Length: 70
Image 1 (cartoon, rainbow, N blue to C red):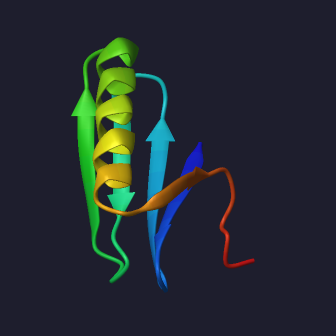
Image 2: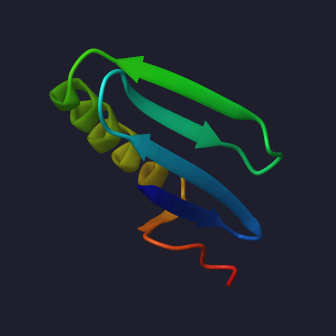
């Protein structure tokens, strides 16, 4: 699944790859990508929930299920 957050003209892409290993990839507005791996789906879900709260607290809007630039 791919989700997006927006903040002004910037967009952050979040990719969730289920299965083993469970991977969360964050693509920054400058295109830099960072991947995090988790042993279980529940760990990935917990991180996703933390991330969405953090992003909202930092003024990002989302998550959007599709690229809001389209």
